[in-house]
Picture 1 (cartoon, rainbow, N blue to C red):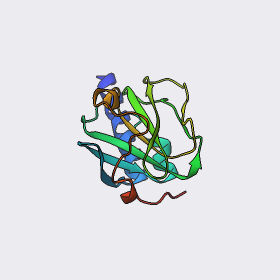
Picture 2 (cartoon, rainbow, N blue to C red; picture 1 turned 120 degrees about the vertical axis):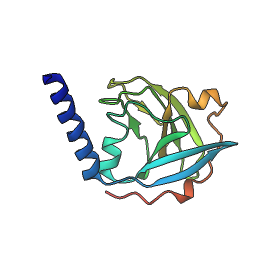
Picture 3 (spheres, helix red, strand yellow; picture 1 turned 45 degrees about the vertical axis):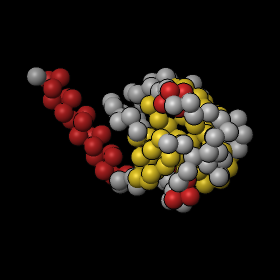
Length: 148
């Protein structure tokens, strides 16, 4: 009984945290013939929270992180429950490198060259579709501008 109540309270707190951040916009991207519905993390709060605490994500869904400037941005998986792959992208949407990330770890995964975006998808999504560095994602220009 106590575990159920504690679980319900934790769920409410997570929902309240997500609500406080505000809903993230969603844009459509494509990688070749593959369609992606990406939530856009364009504010500091959204970039910091990312996909933390989510237990599942549909196959064609992901999260696009929009950074204020090109840089050697890095991602990690603290409090992230899903195994993910991240593609770091330049300002034009070309994939710089792709990294696989394990849940609930603090290992950093960084762009190998200055990146403007990072796209997180379920683990293996890029490899399963033959999407590699050097390929371009379409629709990136529709992403909201980054905000502090």
